[in-house]
Image 1 (cartoon, rainbow, N blue to C red):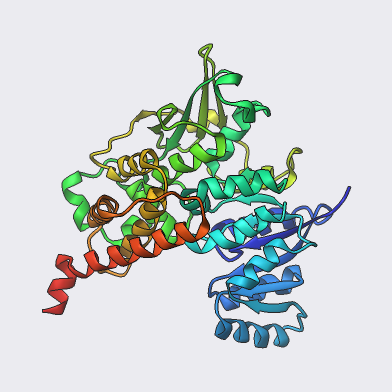
Image 2 (image 1 turned 135 degrees about the vertical axis):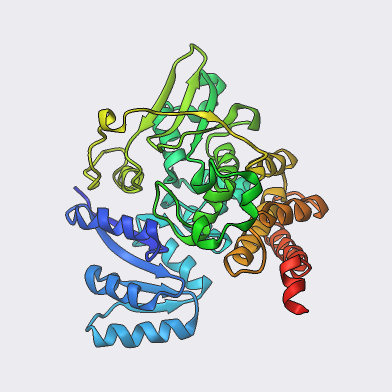
Length: 401
């Protein structure tokens, strides 16, 4: 059995840590070739000490120099590199077989795209790569013989529930509907009138999943589900009108596919990201992931309810962006990233997040998303527009006075 060489983009985040956990359970199958992080020098140094990758990458040169000194003290000979170009280089390196694309946000797009263009097996945990540049990314996968495996639990569930020839067209393989499940986050039952006062700590306290702060806020606003709708469109060539979202608070049914004959095939499992990660790493085989057995008797019941877009307007905005097409999803994503960052830093209220996104999306010039330059230009313009609106927000105005 050939040992797969794995590069992990975003190794100190929750997905990266879970990926290393699965790899550590199978040293005969996988070796770590390269790791990357944004700024967590100490965590990355300890990962390098344990897994001895050939390369470690950090976002900025100052952090890279700190890491070099730390690795020298640990007697670890991993080569340290920095910057976007370095991330693209390790993602496309000839010795890399598999790339776990787990960098959060728009920063994950260039190295993920580089991996696809190099024909790698890409385990995609970065929603934004497809949300921002879906056509570009999917063309790169097709034109360069890359293998794209979704790692988001929902899209991984859909992938597992579809026949392997779904690329022939969903209607041709009898698919009627794709059903994404959503936990509803921490505010599923909270009064809408109370949402304005929620704190970042409350928004980040997800009831089922352990995630980073940005993704946790996206779950609280349900923007994560909106982004997943866009992602599902590109991954499965699914029109928006056959992609539905239902609330499922237990997070046991990770998503479903409904067929023309009335059959609904679902993938179930405990809410543990090691399941889809292990599936992607070993595909088409299956391996132990360290995940406990699903005890349905102990779970007791599985509940489902309709998505409430009054409570979660970000889902509605995502459908609108998908239907507008072009650079609209990139604008949606950029405005959301800026708005979430502002909320986490106390610059505006939780309920201002969808308001900022809607304003920016409504005013944006939407162009064809045929080149990466067009996508990145739309992204930059949307970020600037979002910051301008946030600077005029009531909280910012009160602070200035």
